[in-house]
Length: 310
Ligand code: NDP
View (cartoon, rainbow, N blue to C red):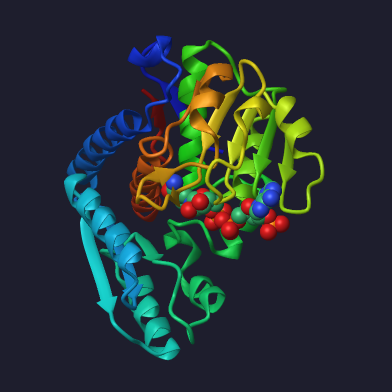
């Protein structure tokens, strides 16, 4: 789905089993800010991202602040619309105004929304060409049908980038690989599976009703865990030489962040694995900026930029 160019051969991580999402994301954001600058010189347009946040969820506020900071660092116009409380009609009117605002190329509504606001109705109100979270059914439908030009949700897009970077260092490809995606949410599992299928992997999706998860894991050359349960995927389930992408973010009782995969044991069997934190997490915001850059190019009638494997 994504245009890709390869900048240089093996990265610094070629001997490491740890996929360093933090540094891969930092390099991507640096590239995005350079591309945004040259786009601005050619078009006199600054890519613009608007984030709507409602309520007082502390985690949501932290995420939104991080998105705002990164967008500003990348040289984007960044707008945060924050309300303690808002009616559904007011929120829809706010989105209508952003849809009509030529300075805004990407709109994101921070989820979850407080009770009384219907998430699906709100997401569907975002103009599909500004839906940089890729949650609108027009974008998810295009992704499922393999139609070019869909905005893809940022977390699976970030996972795909990490996988491509890793396979590049291994001089390998996704074609024909047995990939297992554990989790089938609309924001991670399903789009992840669709992206891997588009890359010609052989994809299995597991969920809470799956009966033989350990066996499925043992035959997965690529394992993506997006469950939301700490250390749920046992190290001994991991196939020797597999690539493991851990999407899970779970808070331990002592406050530490844990992934869905038993990291220490899995690391001994995997060819490469993402840590938590510092793996998938940093890629999500980088991909939000990427989607916004793409949206700005499309709005200006420019050719879509290419994502670099760097
Ligand atoms: P959801 O709760 O929406 O989905 C969890 C999925 O896990 C469901 O499909 C569920 O199956 C499946 N599941 C639950 N129990 C089992 C089980 N016993 N065996 C197999 N599958 C099971 O979560 P999300 O997809 O939104 O997020 C998943 C994780 O990723 C969370 O920890 C979240 O915090 C993290 N996350 C991280 C992001 C990042 O930027 N790094 C961004 C987004 C999410 P079923 O459908 O049958 O219920």
